[in-house]
Amino acid sequence: MKTILSILLFLCFQSNICVSQNYFYGIHHWGSNYYFSRYDLTSHTFTDLQVVPGMVSVAGHMSACVDPINSIYYVFTGSNIIGFNLNSGVIVSNYVFPLPGYLNNLQFSPCDTLIYGLLNTAGNVQLVSINPSDSSTNIVFNVTAIVGFCGGCQGFIDPSGDKFVVQTPGGILGLGIKTGLILYYVPIINIQGEQFGHICLDCSSHTIFGTSANISVGVKYLSTIDPVTGIVSHVAGSSGWNTGIWKPVMAGSMIDQAASIYYYIGAGNLLNGIDLNTGNLVSSHFNIPEMYLIEHVPECLCTSTGMPSSPGKNNSILVTNPFSDEIYISTSIAEPLEFTLFDITGKKITNQTFTLKTLIDTRQFPKAVYLYYIKGKNGKMQAGKILKV
Image (cartoon, rainbow, N blue to C red; front, side, top):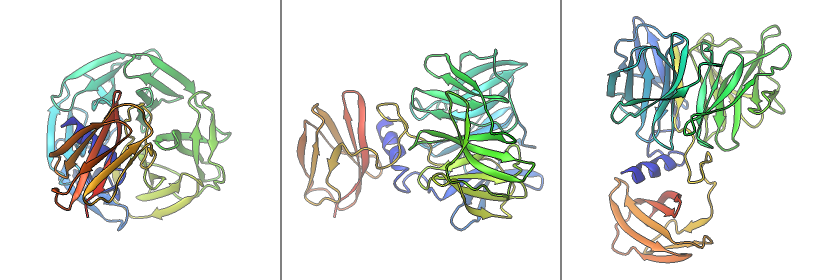
C-alpha cells in the first residue's frame, strides 16, 4: 500500500490523480463559523466544504499542513488536530492533541509520512512528530535555547537532509528531523528599509522564497534568502508591486510548484500571484473570501536521494508510453531493477526484475491508464503513469 501512495504522490505533479493543482485550501471565516474551504485558481471561485468544529477564531498558535499522499488537510485549532479530505471536505480524523501547549508550524514530511511541529509549553519549545495513522506523538528534541515565535511566521519540510525549516522573529532555523540536531540558525539580513518573511520552498530550484516589503514607500518584492548567510535578495528583474503590501498575520503563502507561482493573501481579501522566475506580479484578484492558513497541493516529493523533486526531472529510465502489445524498458543503470505495474485503483498487474532492459508482454491487458513503479537496491528510482492504446 505504501508503494501505491508513493506513486500517487509522484503523479500529483503530473495529473489530477490526487487532487487538482488548480485549487488551494484553507480556513474561511464567514459569520460566526469557520469553514474548511477550497479556492479555484482558474475560475476564482471558492467552496465551503465543512464547518471546522470547535474553532471560534484564528490565532497565532494555530497552524495547518497538507498530506498530499492521502489528500488530507490538517489543522491545529488550539486543542484538536482535525483532518479534512481535500476532495470531499469530510472530516477523516479529529482528536485532542495529548500534550499541553500550542503546536506551531505543522508540516508534513513526504519521506516518513509523519507530521512535525514546534510545541510551545510556557516557553519550553520542542520539535514533536505525530503519526496521523494512530495519533501517536513523540518528542524529537528540545530547541528552547534559541526559538521564539512570531505570528504568521511560516516553515516547511525540506526533504533534502530531512530538515524542518522555520522562520523565527529574527532568523531562519533548520532542525534535523532524524538527527535531533540544530543544523543552523542564521539572523535574517534584510535589505535596508525592508522586512522579509512568509517563507516557502521551491522544490525544483531548491530556493527559499518570501516577500520583502518596504512599507515606507509602499512596495513589495519577491525575494530569496540564503540559509547559510541569512542574506535577503530581490529576485533578479523584480520591479515590485504596490497592491497587497500588508498581509493578514495568519493568511499564509504558498508556491504552486507546477506553475512556478508564489501566492499570498493580502489585506483587503486580495490574492496576489508572483512569477518565481521574473519576480513580477502576474495575477491579482480582489474580493476573495477571508481565508487563513492557505495550503497548495502538491508539496515537495521525497526521492531515493532525499532531494526535493519536481516532474520531469528523472530521465534515467525509459518506459514505452503509450504502449500497445508490449512495454519496453531500458536504462543505463547497471544494477537489477524491479518494475511493477498497477491499474489505476492500485491493484498489482505484473511484476518483473531486469537489468538494463526488458520487454513485457501486455497483449492481455485492457486499454487503460496504468501506474508503474521502478525501484533499485536503494529504493524508488522512478514512478509514472502510462497509457495502453
